[in-house]
Image (cartoon, rainbow, N blue to C red):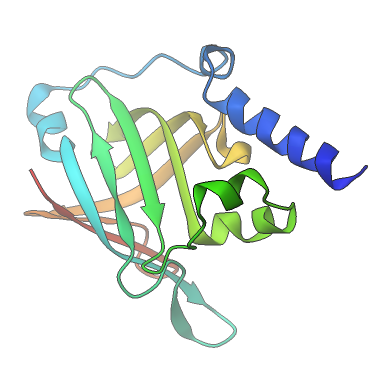
Length: 172
């Protein structure tokens, strides 16, 4: 398979993830929640830390840099949208993007990602589950992504704080 074919396949699946075909195959049932509970999570949350613990080195790694960019958005109707990028994005002009080679995509996911879908919250277990309908993480499409969380005032932490930390602050 030549580079042009690989690029075509990648772009086809990327386009498919944002079409109605990809969206219609996913779960659409979001458990009912009380307004009081959902209002705690509803809003736009700006990412201020995106870290994973490296058990080999015993240190936290900032996968998207020390000051990652992006937002987690939870709507009252049960929609979630997540967009994250590194603090130092890859600089690619529009002309260059049209002529990009396949090796570019090997680094793509280390620069940014996004996905969208619906969500449900289990307040007793402090778990938010994202029902992914589309996005750049192709292996997430049509999957449930449960995440442990803690909410303290205007700070939302997603992850167990032992192996993963996604710290966000409310902006609205």
